[in-house]
Length: 460
Image 1 (cartoon, rainbow, N blue to C red):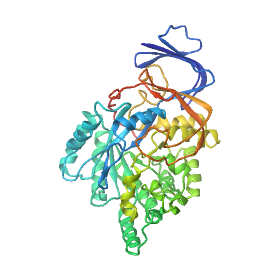
Image 2 (image 1 turned 90 degrees about the vertical axis):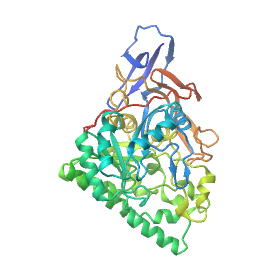
Image 3 (image 1 turned 120 degrees about the vertical axis):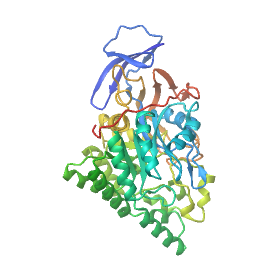
């Protein structure tokens, strides 16, 4: 099958021009003015933006956490992502302590294979680094195409590794051509403050926020940067939220070190005042928590300064009934926030439309940089001859409201209920197939493919 998109305003991380795109099979075959090809399907994109399919490198689908599972499966989550213009996601495989990476991968494969609607890949979260785990790193990179390894500096007893394990992991990952990513918060301090607040009977969602002050993230971000500098391992800090943490990375640049930084859409546009609503504050309980208005200003500036390379979601949805597990104790609220479907439209509306970032920067942080950092470029993340025909046709003028009544995520509330935004996804192609057309999903369960990734260089 062939498809011709005519007269669209094509936007990449570097370009902005009006042209046609010729798609045959799964890839882009030609780009140019007034292309002469005859196609099975023609889409007139006059007046519309055409940009690469979004790449969200931070999602948690069907993930076991705090005695329950995140409510989006690989089917419902990737379908919702497609509705929002995200064609590829990277999920997290969680190693169980005392078990192998191979066992963990088999478990996640059993849930994702044959069910994902959009394309996906995996990070490997290492929670028990030992000699056996060390021997598996090369296999994950060379044989499985999993080239990024997630670590936690918090969640002691379940996910957290200590600095000794971190350094040893970094040395092996660097040797094999991979990247180490990190949840950078000081778990010991957070555990102390959480216990203190609970002992004092301070149990509302506000104390989730107060148990994770800015310094816990700033300290851990600096410590991670120091260890990455010592080992020479490429490092990537996930879901950065605050000025102190970004300043730790800014300081690392003074010794000519590059640390990749990801923030998430919620940290750019929501703030900690939401926790003051005791009845609904659980909707925004995530880790790290929402921060202050000054941190939003810092993160937007960091994007424009090139210090923040990626805007992701940390999509980890729980239904309201699950959130109510912690109605009497903030420490029992499952941590997570639904946004996989809303990321691109919110980033366009609050970033581009409001004048905070350019169109090129929008594509860079939402599509191109994650593909480059995690070894999928130029197959993913750009519009170029030979690249996968993952394309979003986007109306930059349509206004609409976000609501749980109309979204496609498997969660019964929206963190952005009633928000009016400007800009809407009209049509989405994944590997040359129209998978979203005016709000209808045309891709079947299992259409999504696992994307094996290349070794990483630590540069973009």
